[in-house]
Length: 237
Image 1 (cartoon, rainbow, N blue to C red):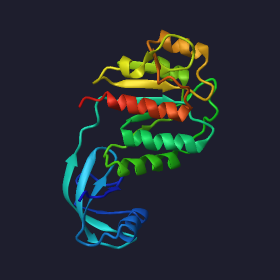
Image 2: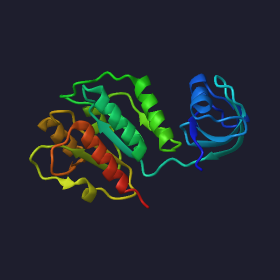
Image 3: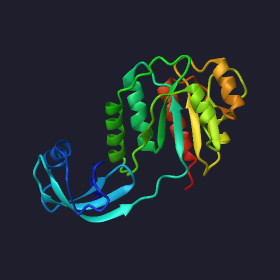
């Protein structure tokens, strides 16, 4: 049986013992009904995987003893999505959850000319990323960057593969055909109402390739999800 994974962001790499916080302890002991002697896993979100055994099954301060620490390499190539956050918070939260499960490593809230929501609740969104990381049994927590302007992302990006998905009637290549496996990649996903023509031209001038995500017009969060799936499909087997 697979061992459950719990989040331990403050665990030290050389730790011999560790005490879970109250929320994690309650979930481990009271909800999942683990008890003294049970083996579980801890993730610090920075690649460390700890195999531990419960030594005190206190539901408020569960204590464990570290048996093995394994350092997992960061996922390669790096997959990044810069996406305009929607006014409907639930939709973007859904996207963040699914993008994490799929394996996107960096998400950039993209501020465009038509972005409707620039302020984000970082603490809540981070908790969604953590939950999705644990559910999908990963040990690297995706990076949710601070909101960045379209201009900054376009001018400052140096990824070998750069794409912009837009709906303007211009010649575009399907993302699955344009993307090559094994290279760090970023894709720009626009807001409701799409990028402006000026933004598209700015991205193209900076070396971004125009791509399509399918035959139908997609909502912002759906476009992000499709892009995440297609990018993941190009990972080396």
